[in-house]
Image 1 (cartoon, rainbow, N blue to C red):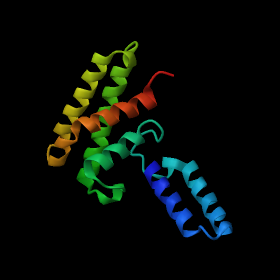
Image 2 (tube, rainbow, N blue to C red):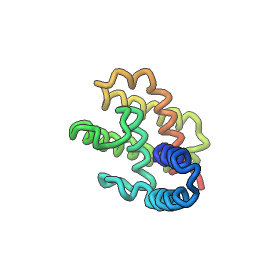
Image 3 (cartoon, rainbow, N blue to C red):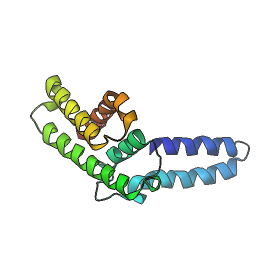
Length: 149
């Protein structure tokens, strides 16, 4: 989501660099879009703040697409279900006392997530090469959203 906003901002700055009045108007529109965030997107029953970011990450990393509309129904269903499965594992493990300070527990969760992704998306050969990096991104996002406060 933030990549899209960044790209839009760059385009606005480029397109309206000599017209401050129009730039200000367009930036106001972009600011409202940022405030709306993921609320405008289809959430598939996922929380827009704490769950949809995982859907977006998997969408980009597994299928290499920006918009869910680029996926067929089967791919979309698999993506949504896998996101829910990954979130269930994260929540279950992150509830452990002091989970984010236990490196072995984190490694087990990351391994479980990677294994689940490889099983769920077994037809995606490119995923194998980036499985560990994707597992790390998911763990970082989980820490950001579900980590200690």
